[in-house]
Length: 385
Image 1: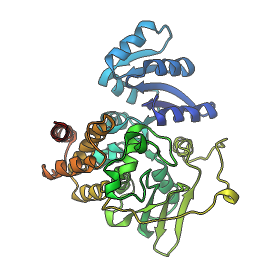
Image 2: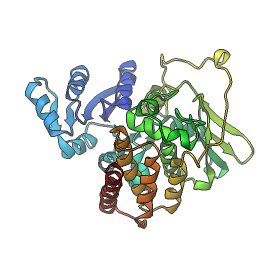
Image 3: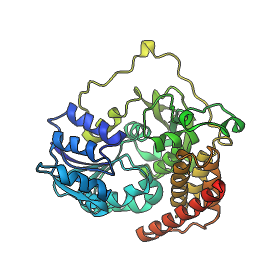
Image 4: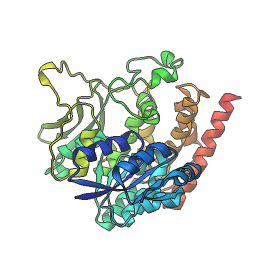
């Protein structure tokens, strides 16, 4: 029996993690749940799973919940509550499915408390890969990837020597705008952007998929998870989202992990590793699957991938600036304040305005994140005057 703390429990990954818990009740017990503002959804989860601790980072939402809740679960709020959930003594594994930079502090707190991490918050490694991986080594804890692509790579690398790897190949669906020109992208709507062809995800990550920034973040994440130089990380557009990623070895062999596009499969593997448990999730039907196709990504039109590679190779605080500028730009796009292509412009200008610092500690990363957000917000304001 593994005890789980689920950070971001009312979001897409969090709710699918709870599906896995429901399917394997003898394997998992939920001891902590954390969300942002969704007090009613969190309350329903509390009633079902009876955790020791529940957290809402939004103080007003937590107050609403505390006023009406009469159960035995302790309710906490704010950043302190989130850190308490991440480091709860009873927890064995912390599922970090918060969105953005907000996932970094609780991930570090969980590592410091000796918890294994089921990582769905890719921004944690993008922003602070060196810091986080070093902390995990020092504490002797495991970082188990939940993202479908990284879970695929993790599986393909099991039992293999890293010096035999020629390259890792991250697959990308290409998003809803695959094949469109820059001129066509200038006029796409928010609704169009959120219509992902194969995956059902939250709004922010769906926009990131459309810009290919998400794939760029995964490239940086792969660099830290697998200690892989950037020139050995290749992105391949695979619209069917059946092959989740591949590893090419020096003898010419390529290993791939295939499956239906269902996030519960990699979530379950991350939680049950090194074992595999039965599931009733939909199976891949090879007889009716049809053709699998592959393309080279268009990095000139979808510049998010190119910008991420550049930031990753620059290193230091550059990925932190990239992530912060992207979060601000995507929020502005979803609010209807800027166009789709302006996301790239804001990221690029933010990266150009600040030299990267090497060897950054947590306080430095927080400072650089705050600076980049303010600078990017200023660029948004200029666009909307």
